[in-house]
Amino acid sequence: GENVEQHPSTLSVQEGDSAVIKCTYSDSASNYFPWYKQELGKRPQLIIDIRSNVGEKKDQRIAVTLNKTAKHFSLHITETQPEDSAVYFCAASTGRDDKIIFGKGTRLHILP
Amino acid sequence: NAGVMQNPRHLVRRRGQEARLRCSPMKGHSHVYWYRQLPEEGLKFMVYLQKENIIDESGMPKERFSAEFPKEGPSILRIQQVVRGDSAAYFCASSPKLPGNTEAFFGQGTRLTVV
Image (cartoon, rainbow over all chains, first blue to last red; front, top):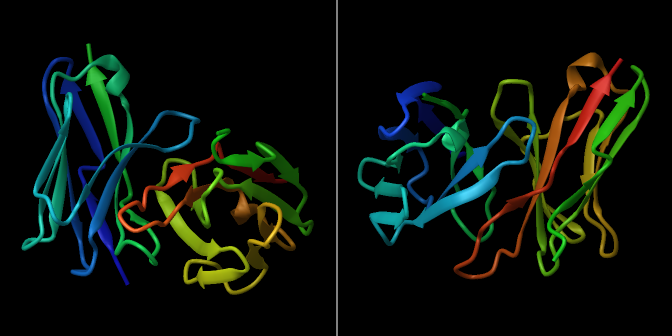
């Protein structure tokens, strides 16, 4: 089955700097890659996703890239702000009739 | 659209009791996932269901755990004879699973404490 690895487990960046979180997946049939943000004590919330027919997607300060050949995808957050502090999860799915498998998460700290 | 609703939000059970966790998916969503999250850990897949059908239960412990998603009513995750190690947050997510739309949205979770 699918296995998703996520790095780093913890990341501290200065406010205003960029943060990058990287994930790899094992199942070449995976074609849907969502990213979720979870604040302390709250539900995971979908922040951006990418499908395998595109290599990059951007939404304001957040961007995701996908390299299907290498089976890895990344989340980029630019101009980080205090409210970006949270745990971020990457995930992979083969799409219509398959489960969504999550990485172990990255705890992002934005330093003042 | 009220979003994915889980209840109860907090549940305390003594060892050996049964825990029933409920999840009502978003309107129009036909598929439900259940995940378990231990403190400071990730989201571990448990089971994936559509109405009246378990699609994948490969993440569910073989004993004491069961899940259903009946034709009418919420999805239920049932844990029999709970033990301390079952203490965790249990999240459900729902998805429409339409062609080109596989987004999954999470409920607020049920925090189970076994005493």
